[in-house]
Image (tube, rainbow, N blue to C red):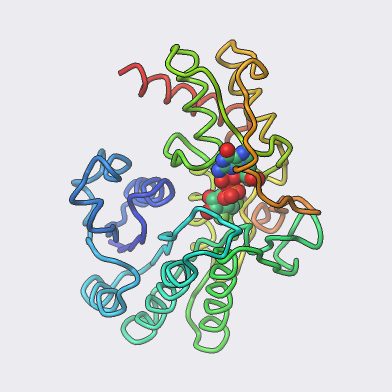
Length: 322
Ligand code: G4F
């Protein structure tokens, strides 16, 4: 039986990936923050249904000795490095912590497998924020990186680390450059979940308004399980490589909100307020990915923009009325 180790198993992506790997018959190990185990209401809810089928390792990926020991003990066949501080800020604050969780962790994992288990395959969750202020749109695997956040800089640094360990040390390493991907498990700080949660609260008479930033901001939004299936597909290729994981379609925050409200028979304009504190510098060229290389492996998306929103609304209605 193959063994997979997931960092960040309690998050949206980690929990979805764990389910997919279990379905494929893998033995699944997950690194999770100790506080998530101690406060199950915090994060274990995403993995509540599989918690008895996976082995959780409470530790921090920023602790090099703990990372080394975990890999020595488990001897995984595959590692999926998804743990990250994932909220993007263009203010340069808390840079060392950001570099620690999004870059140093990658280094500790890669150097440990180089030492212990050179045959272990390695997937890294990259981000469209690596292109930050893009020079062209859509972006492909050949587009130039131009990160504008510490988050993006840390992701680009990890990307080059993977490339170096692949080209110079012979490890099987792949970066999936993932654009925004959503599901009912998305955290409330991200705009999609914020819109869905508030729209449902308004529908149930528990809120009166939705305060957002720039409604004209556009994103390439996809469905998180499709992106985790992409990670598995990428890791099943004979040769390691890097891929854009995106839909190639753009929608605005306004379109997202309009769709969500109309699915609840509400008119968005009656409820939206703008607060400039949520504004971020917008890009000259939008962050939109070109997934052609990945499609060449047979990948496709399973849900449209509207279907993703519908599913998030249905789950939110169930949660808020139970
Ligand atoms: O939902 P967001 O906060 O996601 P963002 O910054 O694009 O980052 C997400 O996707 C990246 C690419 O996959 C990941 F790397 C990252 O880890 C994360 O998962 O913001 C989306 C857009 C932005 O343009 C933002 O300016 O929505 C705009 N927006 C407008 N009003 C808002 C709001 N964003 C938030 N969070 N809150 C608002 O009220």
